[in-house]
Each structure stands twice: as structure tokens, then as C-alpha cells.
Image (cartoon, rainbow, N blue to C red):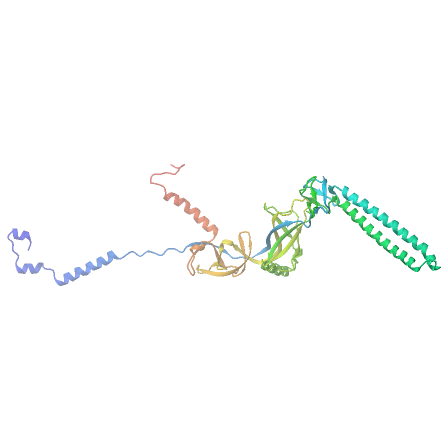
Length: 419
């Protein structure tokens, strides 16, 4: 009964009240409808899965690859000769210009030779005395020999005279040796270049005392043509080089070698390998190798750092992939391969030399397969991807650029140059 009914004096009868009361079926139907509406309102809209990531792929092909290997090392002269003082004397003159070419036999230093000339004169005097004594002994023998035959003198006198001749001859030999030694010392005062080459800075000046106690270093001469390049070759590099040499039928000594300077420029003249050490250094695991290069212009100097590139030959049917397409993990290399169903799978590959921005693949890939070169971080094992070539990816990026610019424009705003 409502308040209006009470005000109007209307009092509903019990029968009327029973007619207005909802039935149990109506209540149940209303509850069911409420539950359906509640369930529909609470149900979330299903979100479609994200599309597979786009990656850049390339087809695996084979080409004939020129095989080269590089080594870092240092240049040195075939002969670095140290010119040293061989007698004790004062420097009188310096007879060369530092940093210039000198010929073998050219005078370099003049030392004070007066003391040695005096010794030479004394040695010659002693030689003259020894010769005079020897002549007397020989005369005595000639005079006493007939007398001894007639028994006019004792035989012992003749024997003593003959022995004196032998002693005299020995004294002459000793005197001659002293003369030769004095002449050598005088000759050492004229210091000359022992070979053709470039001479460095002088280590002494005029008036310096040299040769006292030890041979004093005066200057150093280096032969510059040819020039030598030294480097260390690892055991693995050596074995690979020998294997390729056998495959191509070329000896290591016959392979052309290019010298690359620190500026990146190449030396115009080609060189060749002239020496490989007999054993591997157990401390470093490397072999000492030497290559020789012509150096007629004397551009290359000892001590320079450089690289050499050895041309081993062509490797037919080789596979090259960008270096970024290969990942390394715990000493193993992997590449992502795309199957016919556009699913990615990781595969172990064996890599060889680095050639510019590419890697030589020795094992693991075949012609006709597709590998991922960009977008490796988006890929999971067995996941779907959208493979695209680099050209397709660039085209998609170019098409997306104007749309992105339009989406950032404000309403009513016009771009420059358009009304």
C-alpha cells in the first residue's frame, strides 16, 4: 500500500495486494536477466596478437673470394752496423753529414794517430835490429862451418851459431808482427764506412776521447734497400696458410705480399716472404716471419710499424655474409636462418677470415637459404617473422615517414609551402 492510497482513503484489499505481488517465476527471470547483463558488461574485449616482427633477410649465395691474410709487424734493415772506435784516441775530425747516404770505404772520422805512428816507428826500428842480428848470426854460421869441418874449432861453437840463427829468425817474425799491429792501429785512426747505407747521427764530437776501456759507438749505418718486415705468425695462421698453399699449389715464398703503411697507403713495390723460423716460440705460440720489399727511394725506415697483406689466391664457391648477421656466444658463432614457413631458427656456423664488413662462412650455411641480417634482437627460436629485403624495408620506412609527419600536425595547421 502506497502513501497516495492512504491519503486518498484507498485501502487495497488483500486480493488486490496479491495481484500486484510478483510471482516467483518473474523474480527468477528478472534475476537471470540481471546476471546475463552483468556478465556481458564484465566480459573484456579480446585483443588480437601482435604481428610478427619485421626483419631484414638476405639470400645465401656463393662467389669466388680472393683469400688474403694480414699481419702486423715492424720494419728493420737487413744490416744495422754500429761503427765503433777500435783504438783509444781523440777525435780529430767528423767527415760525414748525418742522415745521408754513404758508400762503403767513405771516411767517417779521423782520430789522432800521432801516438800510433810513434809506435809504428818503434816497431820498424825493432824489426831492423832483428834483421841486423839475424844477418850477423848467418855470417857466423858461414864462417864457422869450414873451420868446424877441419876441426879447427869445437863443434859446439858451430852449433851455438846455428841456434843463434834460429833465434834471430824468430826475433824477426816477432818484430814484423809488432809492425803489423802498429800499422793496424794507425789504420784504425781512419774510420771508414763498412758498407753502403744511410748513416745516422754521430754519437761523439771533435775532441772526444774514444775507445777507452771499450769500443765507443761512433755512429750507425743501416742498409735500406731492400727493407725487411718482421712479424709473428700464430700457429693456427701458419697451418691455415699451409693448407691453402697446398690447395692452390703455390708455395708461401711465391705469394705476392703487399705492404700497408700506418697512413693506410700501400707501398708501390710488392714483396715476398723470405724467412720462416724453424720452431714455434713456446712462450707466445708464434713463428717469426720475415718479408723483403724493394725500397729504392729509401722511403721506408727501420722501426716503422706496418701491415702486410698476403694474397693466397681465390677460394671458389665461398659464402660471405655481413659480420652483423653472425653472433658469438661462448666461443661459438650462430646465424638466424628463415625457413619456408617464415619461422626463425638459430644455427651454428664456422667462420673464417674477416673480409671488410663480411665474414667467410666455412660451414653451416647452404646456397638458397635465407638469413637475418638486421633485427636479430627481435627474433626467438621457432617464432614467426616477416622477412623483408633491405630494399623493401627502406621503401616501407619511406612510406611511413609522410604519414608520421601528418599525424603530428595540429588541426588547422598547414605545412610550409601549402595553403
